[in-house]
Amino acid sequence: MADESRLIVLGRISGLYGVRGWVRIFSDTDPRENILRYSPWLLDGTPYEVAEGKRHGKGLVARVRGFEDRDQAAGLIGKNIAVRRDQLPPPRADEFYWADLEGLAVVTTEGTDMGRVSHLFETGANDVLVVAGDRERLIPFVWGDVVKDVDFAQALIRVDWDPDF
Image (cartoon, rainbow, N blue to C red; front, top):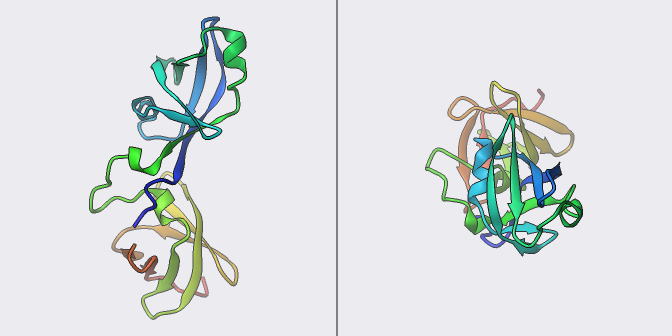
């Protein structure tokens, strides 16, 4: 099972907005506004409450409690926004957080060891597992067709995939 105290990066502070301590937010959540639901944010491991936030144009802006002007907020630029894993809602039975999949072993349905999940990325069509082993493999995360089972108790993902591909 997932380490509930582990930190999960949800986005970062990308710039300043206005003169009253607001900052621009780059969010990795889907939809992007979901990042505003989590508080406190952990910035360099220190918790900060989100005072307010909103959509602004195509992006997001927020005000972090304790940062009341532009000069104070400037020190936040570039910081990752993280939360503890236990702040995230539990995924449905057919959903997975990428952070929970990273580090799991990947084996074929025939038992061939492919390596471990290094990270994931999305292509628009589907998510892709990047598996580091004897070489790096890109395996589409297509539930049922390619990914047959995710077993957190055994820290294992079983795939129907040709190891030579």
